[in-house]
Picture 1 (cartoon, rainbow, N blue to C red):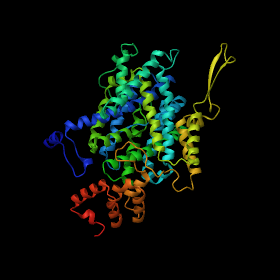
Picture 2 (cartoon, one colour):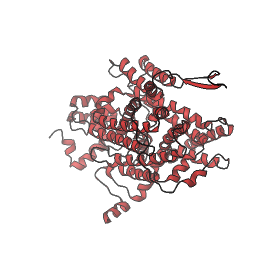
Picture 3 (cartoon, rainbow, N blue to C red):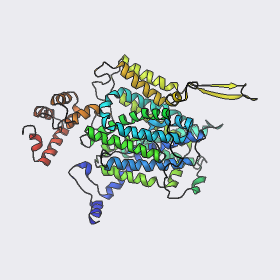
Picture 4 (tube, rainbow, N blue to C red):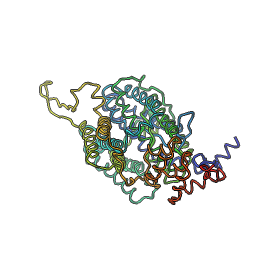
Length: 552
């Protein structure tokens, strides 16, 4: 007990910075900063899916409070598993877990057609699939280059903008588009822009959350808020598994989320490699598999507790780079905070009561950032005619799902009936479940076209110039190349070729025991201060054996 108290007060330094435990006075603010950076994105998905299910008559409005609580609770548990780790689960790095936007469209389609229990059956199947695929995914990632992942992320952001537009106008009903609602949406957006322009970096990281808070406060005197139901919820509550019934497993719904699982795993791979580079930790294929397996476990828990698929949150990777705090226990503490927030029904009820126009203003910025991150990923692509065609057709096929025919049928009943038909309304139910979502339709198209059109091209999508990623240490390395650089089974000649082609991987290659002395010396001669720091650190730990290892 005395040791624990001393650790909380003074912290504890270990041999590796990622294992350091900051003192409590630093640990709590740093953990809270991570929670605030992800909070708006974390609660957006239950608000979107829950609102769609309420509109479809599948849930009650009060059920959204449960969705928010479950989301935060499982996000906390998944973050702790990823950061602390047990057995072959968890990459043991400072990664925050949250619900992915990639599954929003497919889940809304599944829920509207088959009910919410089918959503959760599909989520559980998705998580099990991710855990089963984790050990071999490193070998499959070459099928999902930046051309594919960037296109899919762009489609996700663009598809979600329809939700933001609905919120912006005040929701459904005859009052949709009320100038007061639209004005409040633009006001919230203006607050976010002002924070990005004038606030310090630490505040800009939470600009969307602060925009939500300011917009909600301003909406109170305008009579746009409704928290009359707050008294129905206690201060403390417990999230119960299978709140809406036992899960239902339907094959086309499962297939739709298995496509999403591939997107999630590709996205998480990039985040793991990025944070490993930032904290100077080697990401081996086995360690990557541990991280992906933890993603799958979090997703299975999401299905059990009635929430959604989980992935690493990229904005928190950027926060690790900016703060320079490498300790994974900061993420652990943030996970504990998320678990506590998941046990507070009144807090979830406050979020559920945020005016829709305020959510719309924040949603335009949030979903636009998702789309922009897809464009940023596509910055690595060499846009010849073939790759332009892959992106163009994939986005076009995804947008086809937005096509609807509206007309008035006077023969259906005694009075005219307004009819709305989707493009695929005459297709079988299984086809609609998979392709009614622009996200899954676009993902299938991007993967298929890349395999068809780029099959015989050596490096179809990589440009010679680095992409403009926001990590201050330069462009994020390609995940497949980073795995090769860290894998001891990679032949020395391939490591030399990687060193010459990928300078951003030098800090990884120089620590690979298979790298020969000539390559190590050549890397050192390039004058990268990061390489010098890595060699110096390991020489101190190994009493100089690190630099001599290839000669002995």
